[in-house]
Image (cartoon, rainbow, N blue to C red):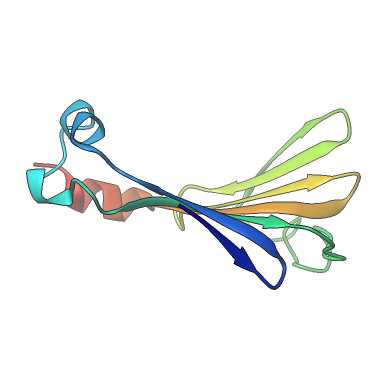
Length: 102
């Protein structure tokens, strides 16, 4: 599913039965939200404005002009292109995924 939001668009992914089986999750989790991706059309946020470089919960990866900040603990991934926020991904945290396992 894809939604239009004030900052751009937000595709939402759902876990199907194959995903639940592959990840050995509880069967009743089929059909629940797997990931929400906010695609920012005109964000002025930078890693510094979000205090990400100093936040120990986030691991930084840089490839050319793309910087990615990942927090497995919180289930959030920020992607910056040329220093500007382009996507924010919300997914399961490590703790939530552990609780979802059979």
